[in-house]
Length: 113
Image 1 (tube, one colour):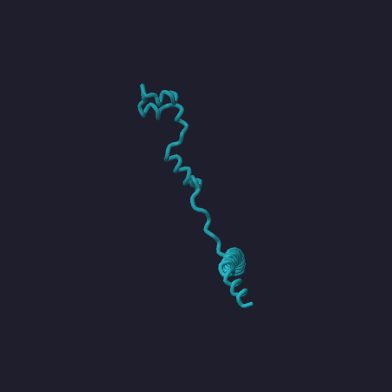
Image 2: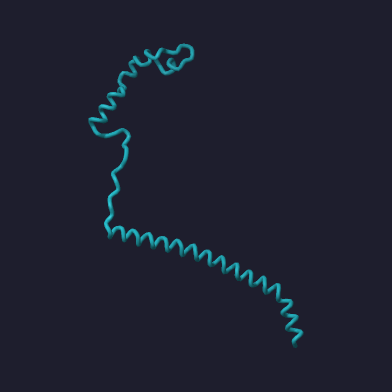
């Protein structure tokens, strides 16, 4: 029996014909798979990994120092970008205010002479 015959809409085989087909005789049954797993001790697929190891105080201190250095670098970079943006805004605002007040300042300077 070929796959085309199995899935043909004209002549569908009975379940017993499919199960008893010689092509399927070499497949293991569920109880054989379970028995094999319990004998070998290896589950299919592998489950949980080994539990994490505990860190010594020295290792923990080293990791904390690395984390602190990394966080400091990240925060410093972000703060520098924000400071640069704020400095540009402050300069732009000062120039705008000077442009707005310049005509009056010039008039006042010319009148005082």
